Image 1 (cartoon, rainbow, N blue to C red):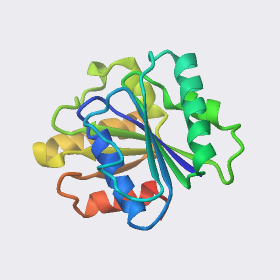
Image 2: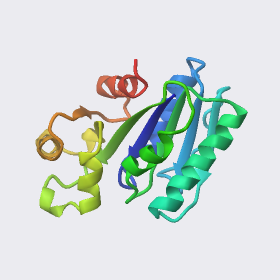
Image 3: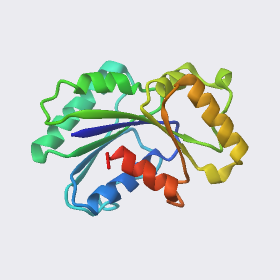
Length: 198
């Protein structure tokens, strides 16, 4: 079970990305469980992903580490009782730390359980100056396996390069993808394929 833990500020395109992942997997008849913490960037329900094997659950909990961890674990257990998914995508809100969620799920008895920590950002609004970033964002970036620089069409490439340089300073060696999810360009296609392990 490949579990994608997705962080990013509101408006970065997290829900849109999850929808695209759902479409990609649904068209290939793969099973995906989606857990959205809070209200998400946009509304996502099973009518927007009309594929067999796709299940969606929203969680509204205070972003307190212990309560959030237990809520995610309980929800995943309940979803797996109906149908064990091959993929799980968890959209985390604001200040949540994905490593804590990962640690609470690692012991669950699912076959081939693996985790991918992903940070998504909006190139148009994200600061390229480390000193302007809140500590929780720096921590989320540092803990990420993959970073997606989204909405590159909303700014110039000089700023995109500055953001990339800053990200590499925070998390040397991290895989970084640049794309515009709205346009579904080649970079975004490679990003999706990397997330699902193709």
